[in-house]
Image (cartoon, rainbow, N blue to C red; front, side):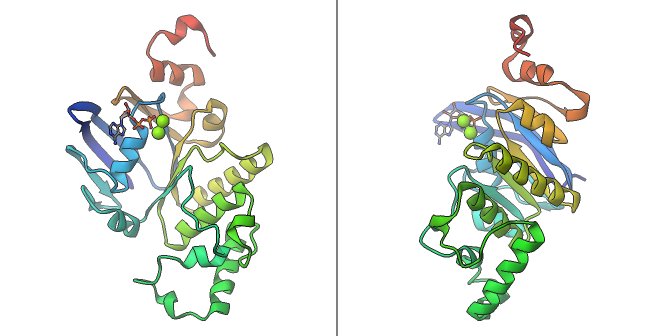
Length: 247
Ligand code: ADP
Ligand code: MG
Ligand code: MG
């Protein structure tokens, strides 16, 4: 059984169908590309997965448990983290404070002294190969460091599946390389990723598997190694691409 199995997901807004029975399967230790043109339904599917929206039909199984219709908090607790394009960090807090935020209700770390929190954050960053001073003000971090801070935070909470929504948008080439290196290393340790991007070269460099949506419909899934950018783009937009010869 795959780590994540979404099956037959349907969603309509005010009677307009946006997801028309979509499947998404992600295995353990795999980077899975979720592909589709603007409006295909990627964000809606991820909002259903993370508990922001409720599906009209379909089931979601994660790590062997049925999480269909689970709340945002329950989904997080199950081990799914959404790293949004607009990051969820507090700019006026320090890096380590952002790591521990939200841990108060459940975590054993609540009782930790400030100094040991800083130490724990430092250990986490070192383990992940992330270059952040735990006592830096988040507002002073580069965009790439903020992204890595958010990923670190998710992993501190033992996330098993990270959703990265166009993570390279505000990064330069070296920062993208660094991010991908960390993602690959986490993948090799068993963490799974859903990677949303419009950049075919990135997808083919980083991802293991893919799912394509078109107009809210599941059009296919497979291994990146078994396909080409041209074929995938053809699935995203329909057959017309082959005549235009975009790739
Ligand atoms: P993608 O992320 O692939 O660009 P979205 O999931 O954002 O696609 O959008 C799919 C369709 O659903 C679009 O037509 C969008 O306008 C519509 N949609 C998304 N969220 C809502 C909402 N909250 N209310 C109404 N329509 C929505
Ligand atoms: Mg969009
Ligand atoms: Mg979107």
